[in-house]
Amino acid sequence: MGLCKYTPLAAAALFALTLAGCDWLYPESPPTDAAWTDGYKVLLVGDIDFGESYRGSDRRILRNGYDFGFERVAHFVRAAHLVVGNLETPIVDPVKTPSPLAGRKRYVHWADPIKAPRHLVKQQIHVVSLANNHTLDHGVPGLVQTLDALAQHDVRAFGAGMTREDAEKPFETELRVDDRSFRLAIFGGFESARRYEEEWSFYASESAPGVARLTAGRMAELVRAYKAQNPASCIIIFPHWGANYVWKSEAQTAIAESVLTAGADAVLGHGAHTLQEIGFHGEGTVIYNLGNFVFNTPGRYAYYDVTPYSLVALLRFTAQDGELAVHARLYPILSDNRVVEYQPRPVRDAEQATLADELATRSGDAFSTRVRTGKDELGSFFEIRLR
Image 1 (tube, rainbow, N blue to C red):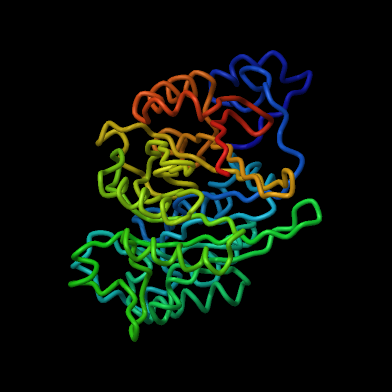
Image 2 (image 1 turned 120 degrees about the vertical axis):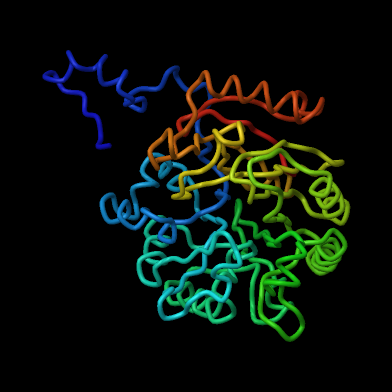
């Protein structure tokens, strides 16, 4: 769908255009908050897959282009200094490097080795987690090609590597805030699952390539060790976990509480293809699932009768009394590609109100005291202080 332009000649058609779905012409109500203008901003988003490996997706990409899915969420990316996402696919030529899991694993992904990394960069996504259930879909050769393709385009990857030590290393960066430097560390991990270990060999070991395994004990150990060496750092856990199209599990809660107790500041998960609850443990915050960002598959929201929304998380880092302060604005987006025609969009006012009620009900009493709702130039949001 192209841009809808307001001109004198088009004035008579404005009402019809709005009914036809051109809902971004004007906001439904004016923003209630100014967009953040100070501090350093990091955008964390959920699952990203251009969709080349899905039947029919190649024709859609040829018709619409790789950037089509980003058009109505690009303003979130432009608001950030740094964008971090979960790359839910290996970057590999499936003909030259066929999958050893073909016929054994229901969904085997791949992405174009030239176009996919080029368009990640074009969309300003320069950091990706590979700790997920598709990175090893084409085995170790596919992992090597993925790492090489990303490195050639200056996209930094974490959560996978040639050894467990490499896979468990966090993404690290120095943030310059009000003439002071603070360290940010983001740890990736893919939840432990029997088939991915015993049948498909996804997890890295001391001598074998793979993804970082997410367990409560091991991630807590990594957090404590990092915190001991970098006591003033901000530590975020970025796990790939949870069953598809459902709310959080007890296992997710246990892992989240373990890593927050160990010293992590927040957990922002992905992997369920839909948002999940927001939780709290002590001073720590858990956004259990961001869901999808741009994920070019049909989706199964209607089949599972689940909320078709995801979140993009804009984190603002500022200095207050010489200490690092971190706030998050979580912007809901409509993710059901059967509805938005492969262009996820910010929620409308009525959708935000309904979603706020559901999250408050599912997330517990702390939601009403620690989460603020609002709307700014980017869209409707839930705001939380993470630190």
